[in-house]
Image (cartoon, rainbow, N blue to C red):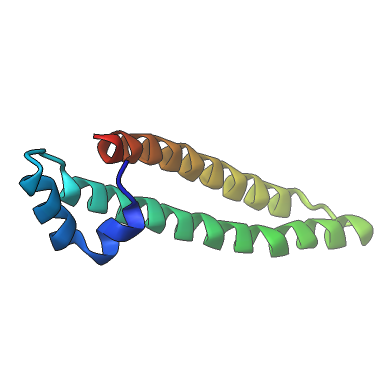
Length: 102
């Protein structure tokens, strides 16, 4: 299995080493998948950062006896987006691991 960190840092060297051994690994695809996975991870982290204040707003509204439905809808939407990103990340990770194992 190839190390994605090494691929990121030394892509040309890894490509040359793989070619010398007579193998054909799709390093460029692996790097593209890794970049997409890292982007989705960043987006997920940003969503989680949005969820914290939304959750706090729900608690404040409920404590004050106000309707918190808008805040709850916002939090639900954020959680759904985060879950979708997690699904996409899982699929990308599986595809990436398949390439790294070849």
